[in-house]
Amino acid sequence: QVRVVESGGGLVQAEGSLTLSCAVSGSIFSLSVMGWYRQAPGKQRELIARLTPDGTTNYADSVRGRFTISRDNAKNTVSLQMNSLKPEDTAIYYCNADYYSRIYWGQGTQVTVSS
Image 1 (cartoon, rainbow, N blue to C red):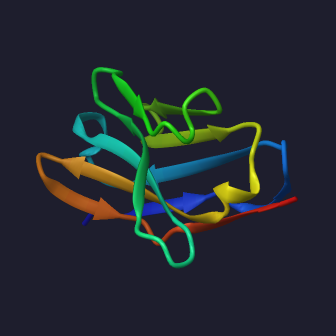
Image 2: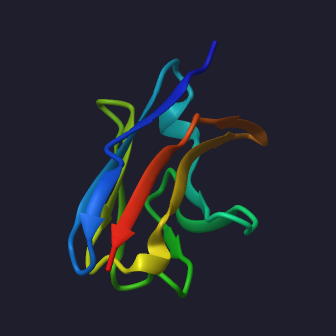
């Protein structure tokens, strides 16, 4: 059974930094495309960062240059380093593992950026 667990959310002031972490149980991690999504109140969930097994990254325009996704295959974890945070980054952040179109979601972690 695959479990996806996020951690690291919290309250931070604007222009601050925060690092989210996501741990994936099971043997699928190294072959999975990992993604970070977020959902702000009243808005749809959106993909903000994506990392393939071969190391290719993609970012949403809204976070490019401020957020960095990385993975540690030895620890089965993916991280999202978030810098220069803005109040509009406030959302629930979700980790997603895509293993050959089998999708696994975490429960989400709240990030709140105060102005």
